Amino acid sequence: MKSRLANAISIILIICLLCLLAGCSARPEGMEGSGDIKDDDLIVVGFSQVGSESYWRNVNSESMKSVFSKDNGYRLIFEDAQQKQTNQITAIRSFIQREVDYIVLAPVVETGWDTVLSEAKEANIPVIIVDRRVDVDDESLFTCWVGSDFELEGKMVCMWMSKFFNLKGISPDKIHVADIQGTLGSSAQLGRTKGFQEMAKMYGWDVVAYEEGEFTKSKGKEAMSVILRSHDDVNVVYCENDSEALGAIEVLEASGRKCGNDIENGEVMIVSFDGFNEEARAAVAAGKISCIGECNPMHGPRVESIIRKLEAGEQPEKLQYVLEGIFSDTSEIETVMISGQERAVTVITDKDL
Ligand code: GZL
Image (cartoon, rainbow, N blue to C red; front, side, top):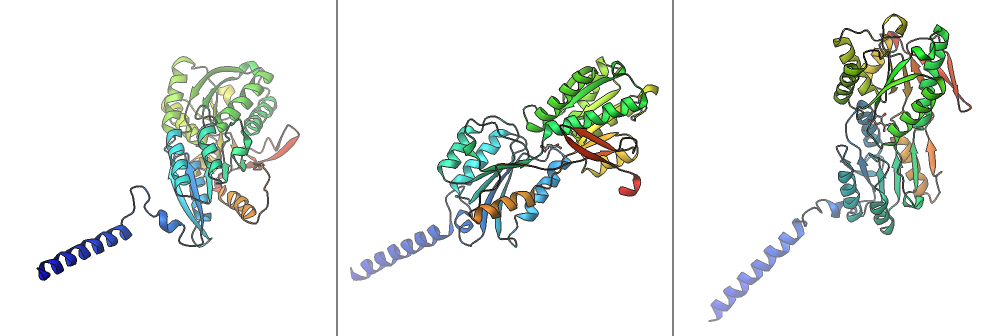
């Protein structure tokens, strides 16, 4: 009897021990690693990135990853949303559940953030918006934003075009321009399109088409093909980023057209934004892209500076604009002045590649 009882007790003890061991090693689904993100004194940053749609975006991601490293005192949780807002909202909720110290959001579009950012606020997690903007009813839902003035970028490029056409004696009614837009509803698209629309109207250019290019090379090619099918008189293409411009150039050259400044002799002028893509910079040096509005992707240090200030109990400026310039293939236009801001034009030649 005693031996059976002893055996039963041994078996129960072994089962308890096994359960205890299983409980220590396995974590509930979806909480992998959640225990260790608080195990050390690293600052935990959850970053929801738009995707990897363009060269600009990849450089932006690398800038964030290189700054928010363990050596610098951070644990970065990086989530790529593949350009879907639903994925970004899911990522933010997982950051809240994992009790990160800071949430950084590069929003794919401006609207649709009020609910999830309210949840972050209720969890007392500061939210920093980077690159594009969010359009929320209550601006206390984010601590601060750092990025570009996209409308100014658009106006700068259009001012460059206007100065170039004037220099060449090309009258505005000879300008037949198409806009290959970025991801509709994103701040970069909204601002660059608004800047273009206002300047084109002011100068009297003939705007022949708007097509969405989603900031990608493949969609830029599709958009350019659609434009050419119904507007073969197009002689200027306003691309809202370099990836789209490279796609447009491929399609134009395949259709027998030459990309360049000499629009009076049949060339098609390409202007664009970003200026960090080696292929696009080479296209400028080759005279295929005439002007690029700089859009600087190196946001890592800027966001880290904001977090350092917050860690020190300081209150960083709510809206922080990045100063940006203009690139061109020609030195004929030396400066551009718009909204009281003057920018020198940087010429890109083969030597700069
Ligand atoms: C601009 C950024 C845009 C870039 C594109 O700050 O949001 O998104 O201009 C990128 O290249 O896809």
